[in-house]
Length: 118
Ligand code: AMP
Ligand code: ZN
Image (cartoon, rainbow, N blue to C red):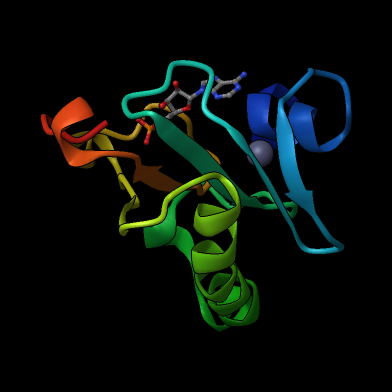
């Protein structure tokens, strides 16, 4: 059995688990975080499983760049009119809970959510 067989984000990619999707293409998926830590809280993931940023190599370079470049458009479309925060938690000390690389996009009026990172 591969690590990704039990990966909730791989199951979302495969359509085996539901998600509130906001964007999808051949390489990536973006959806609303199930427990939002801000008025806007999106997750952007590569479709192809990789555990974390620390496990990325040159092979992930293109999708990482595409994810990053997509963020401003997704944030704007989700209602972030005045900026947003991007976070990638990596490993135990980075607070990573789901071991499928994901980029958090957090936004909305700052007074509504200023606080600890997700
Ligand atoms: P991290 O701590 O960076 O690994 O963050 C994992 C994030 O995934 C948390 O913010 C969770 O709320 C979110 N999450 C976990 N399961 C789901 C799910 N099924 N759909 C959407 N978001 C999820
Ligand atoms: Zn996965």
